[in-house]
Length: 225
Image 1 (tube, rainbow, N blue to C red):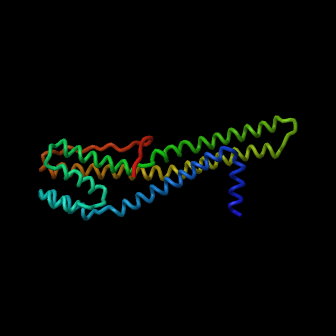
Image 2: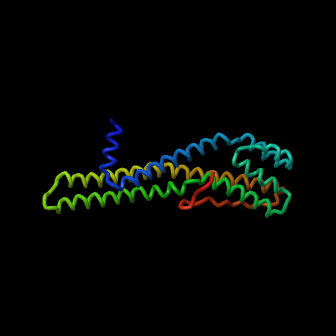
Image 3: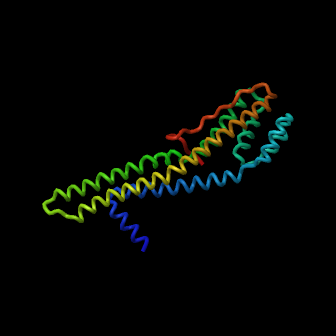
């Protein structure tokens, strides 16, 4: 019964409902994938091991720090472990290793944000297109020799259905997009803090410069894992 009602509304929305349907499917898939990914990453975070790792570095025990970091699935500890592998080399080597590893983590975290950002913009435009085509259909019926009330109301209904669906998809995508963007920003801050700690502690406090990482920005904010 409910499926029949949905199907009727879909058909009454006109041909523009097909690209809107594709946007809806993509939106649900992306939001579901990103929600699962962040849930999995949250379970991998290990603050206790992170404290042990920083304590070992503070005591200049690099061997113990490497042993603690080995095999960890925490993204921040993975970055530190990558940096520890280059500890003792030139300063630029350590800094470059930290930035490279952090960039990979940020790229994974920002995956599909470009798709969500596109859906937020594209879905309402498709709805607007449906509004235009629906009103055109209604006015064509008004201008015909025999005025068809069904034809006019059908065109207006097509316009309203397409607009509502486009806006609904945009709203559905906008909230998760902002949430996941905030999560990426927080991860970037955590990685910068960890990288700076490694540089200071591992370098014997010789430098106090903050390690700056570059987060994928909104329209190009994504990809990988």
